[in-house]
Length: 183
Image (cartoon, rainbow, N blue to C red; front, side, top):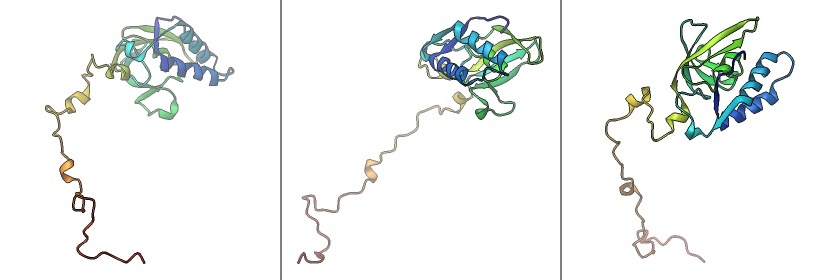
């Protein structure tokens, strides 16, 4: 990473990046390991409930541009196993890792695989899972429009419970047939 803006990570994201560093081979991934080490050493680690909703965390939907070009929207995911072409951006890539922990409005320069650098600017965090769990900040995303205006009715299942067949005193009256004898 050519320049390193302030990086804020959830404790979970930090731990996952530490594991990723342990699993990343030293040879062939020098740029990635360098960026990962820089991010881990400079990060401020926060509890999930304390992270600003404008911070890009894992599973956040981010809006960004490369070198001032058109914006792109992707979901930051841990690795390629959860990747969907055109919809996700794994943090196992230089771009994904560079965006993780940035705040909306931050920009960072990263090395290109072929040499030189590119400037990534995080325009917005359209959705952040940590923020959606905060009671003080309802998520105004597309799910909000699907919420019913009034609460769903309560269904009383007690009226449908099977009633005991006994006479209430614990004895069973099966219609006069006592069944086989115990002899």
